[in-house]
Image (tube, rainbow, N blue to C red):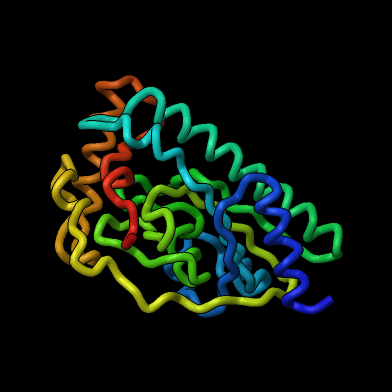
Length: 224
């Protein structure tokens, strides 16, 4: 079976399970030091599948100055769905005699720097699904930052995409609403520590078991 056929099959599978986005990146183009995975894993599993879920717009519209209980529940359930997509896709790959490793949708290993085993947003960017915005999140052309992501690493030959040559342009909606003042004019100046500290305040005052916000996610509708 060709790379294109393999890619089409997995794309359809992701969408059957509720995925809104699908793309494949060449992991060999990543700097190994940017991941918290052992380098040998990246060498052995050179293809990174990125699948995304479009968050509910009405739920996000309910966010004002703090995350809501409705958003918190939605966030949790979407992560569970994405993890299920990761398992289903991994199973399909393994049935074909290849190896697969799903990377959990929301498993942070380094909260202050907001890093997991591998950056879902950078994989998605490399897979042509968007760009990294001023809010330090992936911005998709159709959904803005109103998405959650999951990644599956594999050695199954797949058709890879290239990053989009786009950015946020004149939009600065996220800068205006960030309660921590963490979002700056340049994406590389994003203040991870301020963002983290604000997430901790929300978690403590609202009695949330996750560090979430959603304010800049709501603000980012994309370039449309």
